[in-house]
Length: 425
Image (cartoon, rainbow, N blue to C red; front, side):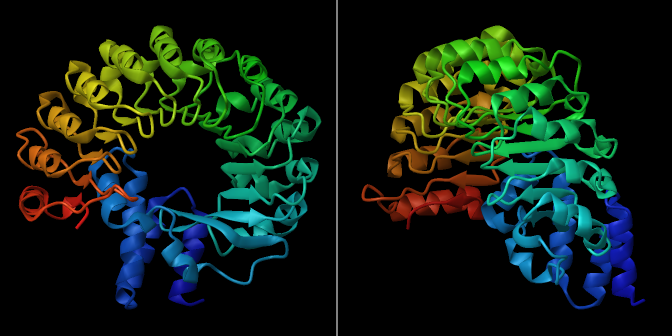
């Protein structure tokens, strides 16, 4: 066995251990592939810190491909066992993490062979056929998997029953059901199962479930669990149903809540989140396209629980300078590290409020893309006495209204932020 093969085998045998991966990176350096070695080390480091850490902000700005690893597609092992594909793939900690599967039978038949040469821990099932989870539930390879992704075919209780009862499902920590990937009966069965309390991440993106049925199904999870990440983007949640959701027992452990593109939330929905007390446990809150308005921003930022939020996404919410000023003047915003206001009419007055806020001095990333800033707003940011920690400042505008900044503004931004800033030239 060559050194390359032996080191790769160690990575595959110990997929949860970073040490073999870092040893492999050293080997890559010695073999004349420093780019891939750096990729492995960076992904390992990213996995050790939260996504509001300065390293994440720096990578989003200077090397966004490092998150998924599309630039490393040439390193994907081939050929794959029948029915498995790299058409859908992701890298984590420097190596392939997710593989696409045409069927559950393909995973059961070829999974062990795949895991002998790639430390895959996640499977995304193809949207062209309903997966037979009875076949998957009986496969020992399931014990090595941490995440499963389903789409298109609304799985019901009968579909999911073999999976949630499988003795091989002990390692599953993440489930994703997107684009009608689960029905209300299937979700209720999952929530009431012994598997649900072990989940750390649940994605329910764009499933077209009636909101009341969605909340009722999740209410079946009445035992203590460890759910940390809940994605309910494009769930069509109105404020009234959201209020019931936020009061559910499963919210007691959620640290990352994605409610993006639930346009029915509005002010009352954000107020319900605050009143439920769930916000005080959140570190990441994504509210893009939820239309909270100035009253919603005020309700969110006026509660002491907001002080624990580290990353806040308020993009595409039609928020103008008044809403931005409410945020900037809140003492509870002092914990923010990443703030996304892109796609809002922030304009120069909003930028001036951000620049003058001592409560936002801890920001490492500020996204003001498509916010209509001119030279005055850019200069205010460049002259801010409080934004010295930024490693990413996004000021680019697109479309017909986009205008290049003047020479003085560009010079001031470059002198203050160096490579951390992007703007129209």
